[in-house]
Image 1 (cartoon, rainbow, N blue to C red):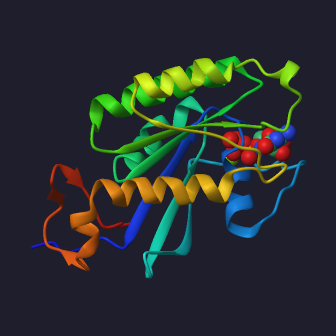
Image 2 (image 1 turned 90 degrees about the vertical axis):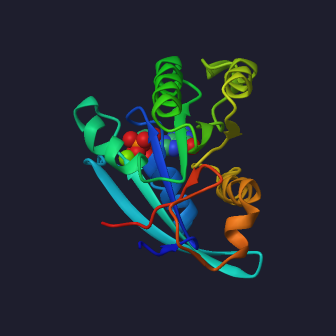
Length: 198
Ligand SMILES: Nc1nc2c(ncn2[C@@H]2O[C@H](COP(=O)(O)OP(=O)(O)O)[C@@H](O)[C@H]2O)c(=O)[nH]1
Ligand SMILES: [Mg+2]
């Protein structure tokens, strides 16, 4: 039988190219921000970070994916193993919000048990440059039962709070699982938890 370590949480970031996924992760992990980043994410990268939750150490495996269509199958293989998916969009780019909507619908259909969040990034821009109305994004989020955040990797706004919040929500949905150190099933109360097998 497969022994599952429920102190590992997999979080995957998806979205369009250039909405700031890599910048969000670098800000969260290293408190770094590089406005001139030229390095496009190729396929997917995994980062790890230990956090404390209820006096226990939780290892976050954070998967940064590329926005290009040609990587969608690879990205799918990562988000399928994830407990939480955050779909990022750029508040100044309506097309990126449309991409987020299509990711949410796609993942909801294939994995109804994954905790989903949407994140409008680049909130540092003047509001008159925003193409995505926060009320519309919030309505989409409410209608689709996802969490909703607005962040800025540039100004370090709401990023740690977002990751802390998704982890809290995840565990509050499954207190029974988290109270045990290890569980011997990969499907308890309908929520699938898998061990990372990279
Ligand atoms: N103004 C602003 N620019 C950002 C922010 N986050 C990322 N960027 C910029 O947007 C571009 C794409 O960011 P990147 O993290 O590579 O996006 P990714 O393709 O989703 O990983 C880069 O030039 C970043 O510096 C943000 O919060 N505010
Ligand atoms: Mg990237």
